[in-house]
Every structure is written in structure tokens, then in C-alpha cells.
Length: 184
Image 1: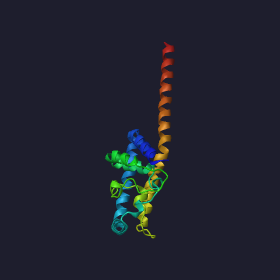
Image 2 (image 1 turned 30 degrees about the vertical axis):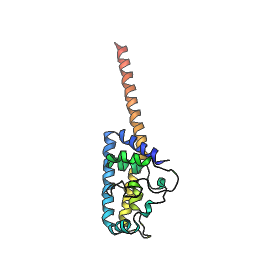
Image 3 (image 1 turned 45 degrees about the horizontal axis):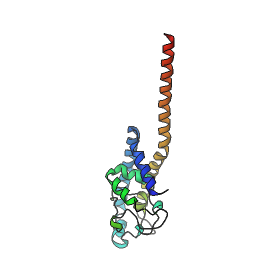
Image 4 (image 1 turned 90 degrees about the vertical axis):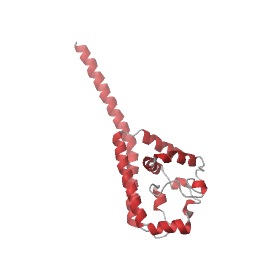
């Protein structure tokens, strides 16, 4: 699926959350953000190497569909809704299914429009080293994103069941009202 449609789906999801679901999502995103901060501290040397030595070579010649996904957009937009318009503008330059430089690099060269405090999962857990640093922190961050993904996968079912329950209550109320009128 093209990133533009995943981005629109994420925006729609965030607009239609119930207060309870929004609270759960905020908690999951808080945990992801904390895990990203822990990874930044534990993998500081690797991040420094990526910034100075390779200068973001991993952001060149990639297939974006393999890097960003629907949960990433939900996470980013939940944490930083002010990035919505900038992200949408970048997505206008998307070349789906073909390798190219990341469209989320400022002016096509960098830095990334996503701040270091809110990054897509693959971007923050991928390093130039063959032996990745901070394996424990990466595993924890992946687990946090898995929980977000599970929440989003079950969200549609929860919304359906909530709506079904509301319709059943309304139908039951109408039935009771009609019966009550006949008794008079």
C-alpha cells in the first residue's frame, strides 16, 4: 500500500478515536517515546557514527514502504500533530514501489523532518554496524511498537462492537417504549 494512503488512514483513525481509545493510544505512544529515549542514550555512539561518518546513507536508495507503516504514522501524528501538513507535503513526492532517497529529508538531503524524539520504528532501530548496539533497548522498542500495532489491529473490531452494542441498546429501548404504549 502506498504511504499516502497509510498516512490518510492514520489521520482518519486519530480523528475517530473514542476518549478511552485515545487514552490507551497515548499510553502506548508514551512508552514508545520513552523506549526511543532509552535507545538514544544506550546507542549514543552508534547514532553519532551515523550522523558524522555515514551521514544518513541508509536514507538513500530505499523503498519507503519497507521503512514506514501505518503504526509509524499513527505514532508520529499522535505525538506531533503539527507535523501533519509537512508530512503530507513530503508524500506528494512519493515514488511508490521504487527505490529512492527518503522523501522525509529536508530539501532532499537532510536532516529528517521527524525529530529524534519521535521516529519511525525502522529508522531508529537500524544502524550501519553489523552488530547493532543496545540490543536490549532495540528489542524493548520493537515490543512497544508491536503493542501499538496490536492495538490498531483490534481497534476496528472494538469500534464495530461498540457501535453494535449502541444499536442493540437503542433497538431494545424502542421495543420497550412501543410495548409500554400498547399497555395503556
